[in-house]
Image (tube, rainbow, N blue to C red; front, side, top):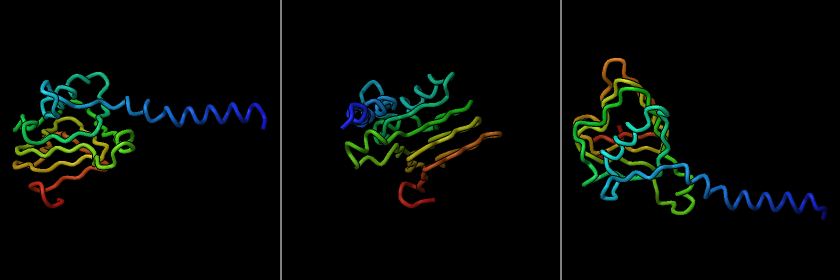
Length: 152
């Protein structure tokens, strides 16, 4: 065995052991001040990313007490929301991605909203997403369910 082979093998092993831990740090947990995922926390994070417009979220489920914006989150500029399941799915395969299960409306869009999933939207009682004039919506690996039960 040559020294280069041993060195390359050790580097490869270190990369494989540390990559998931580093990669998982790039997603952001979504929690309000009470420590639960909420629509207001999602809105605050979108508003705080005015300059980057791209956010990678760790998987979450917004439901129950987390449903605190009935009129929907207004997207005026460009927002790219990514749900990063890589790190979490390795540790716990039960995570299905980023889920919003709330009544009312989820988004009002007058700019551009791009979703890279897995995203799931359900429970909306006034239409999950409303596209205003010049509003654009792109959903990749994204599902909308009518009244929380059947796929649209």
